[in-house]
Each structure stands twice: as C-alpha cells, then as structure tokens.
Amino acid sequence: MLVNAAEMLKNAEAGKYALGAFNTNNLEWTLAILQAAEEAKSPLIMQCTAGAAKWMGSFKVCADMVKAAVEALNITVPVALHLDHGSYEDCFKAIDAGFTSIMYDGSHEETFQINLDRTKELVELAHSKGLSIEAEVGGIGGVEDGVASSGELADPNECKQIADLGVDFLACGIGNIHGVYPADWAGLSFDRLAEIKAQTGDLPLVLHGGTGIPVDQIQKAISLGVSKINVNTDLQLAFAAATRKYIEEGKDQQGKGFDPRKVLKPGRDAIVARTKELMEEFGSVGKAE
Ligand SMILES: [Zn+2]
Image 1 (cartoon, rainbow, N blue to C red):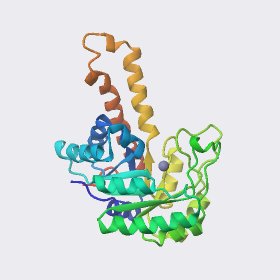
Image 2 (cartoon, rainbow, N blue to C red):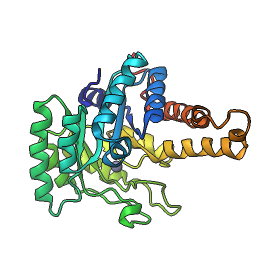
Image 3 (cartoon, helix red, strand yellow):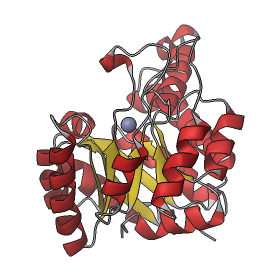
Image 4 (cartoon, helix red, strand yellow):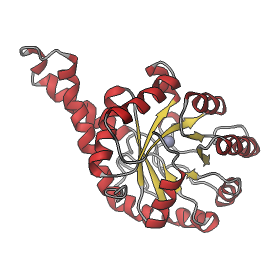
C-alpha cells in the first residue's frame, strides 16, 4: 500500500535528516529503487514526471506498476508515489491515476498570483483526497532555462505566502540547478535558505537538482531545514555508466548476453547501490525501522 509523503517528511524535518525523492522511468528503475529502500530500511518517495509517465504509457500505468511492485517485493518501508513538477492539468491526472502525493509547479505561471490561486485550489483538492502536496516558489535553474553558473533564489515573502496555504512541503530555489552542475557553479545560498526557513517554520523544504552538489553542502542544507532532496540525473548517470561498461566489454556479444534481462541488469544493480549510498548521505538509513 502506498502512503502520502506528509508524515515521513515531518519526521525528517524534526529529525534533521532528509529523504531522497528518486525519479522512476520504468519497471527496472522502480524495482531497483524499492529494493534499495527496503535494504536501507529508509522511508521512500518515488516520483515520476509527466514526461516519464508518458514514456510508460500513462500516469495510471506508473501508479499501478509501483503499487504492484510494492506488493510483489513485500516492501515494508513506507512508500509514497509523488508527481514531480506537475502542471496544473497534470495534478488532476495524477490524482485520478492513484498517485499519493503531487507537486504543483506554479513557478512558471505568468504571475505569482496565478501560482498562489492554483496552489490554494490544489491544496484543498489533494487534502480532501488524503494526498500530500508540494508547491514551488521561484524557478529552479537548469539547462532548459539557459541559466549558467547560478540557480535562482526564491523570495522569502513569497515562500511564506505559499506556505500559509497549507502545502505539506515547499520547493524553493537556493542557487540549485537541475541536471549536471557547471564547473563554475556558485554553490548553494545558505543565507537565503536560512531566510526562507525563518519565514516558513517547521515546513519541510525541498531541494531540487540534487545531482552533483558536494556532500558537505547537502548536509549543511539538511541541517538548515531541507528535508527532501530530488534525485533524477544522478541515477541516470549511474545506469548509463554501468550499461556502457557492459556493452564496451562486449558482453552483449558473448553467449546470450543480448538477453534484455542481462543487458539491463548492471544498470539496475548500479541504481540499487547508488540509491543506498545517497540514503546514507541524506541520513535516512534505518529511519523506517
Ligand atoms: Zn525539480
């Protein structure tokens, strides 16, 4: 059974650790991430973008697959299935499909007022159905925005206004960037993080773009109130590297090495190992015991 992510993140905020929110792309990703969480005895947020859901067929294929996989693997740690960066329309689709948590990313709406109005509406809808909801203030920098060396900084007053709507956790830019960080990246702004935390109290904060931030910066961010760290690119790199090695060693050309289960296994194993490493860094290992 899937749960929403509100309680596990409240516990993380109070306990000064963070939960990774790991993006799934397909069956292999799903099984690997679940295996890692169970072995690490960590609560888990599995998340999926609209693009990945489209790749899998639909939000419903994703939700049904994750639910079935939790049952099939006898997973005992709490698992939430969260919509990552949902548009207003995506949120309704994910709720209908059986997701237990949504992110409404209103940071790209034309005005802050639209973000505020739609977040308010979706908070009421999500809570009426027992789901948790994440909102976003200010954009997160990234390749798609053409931002180079520094991510955006969210306005603490806007964070306070969105927090007051009753969201369960809040994404706010503190210099973080999606994708791979450029060599001249300016780093996280801990001053801005502290200013936002001062305005939002014990609300769990979310750090997007968790790939490649130095561990000391990750841990300082956790100590200042970050409770959810989104990890997508990191596992993609781990999967690609392991798959590349298998092919470059010519293993797909030896015996039945072309069997898709053999081709995909090194990548799947690499996701398990890397997810557990990240759970260790974030401090969530053993928190579901
Ligand atoms: Zn993000």
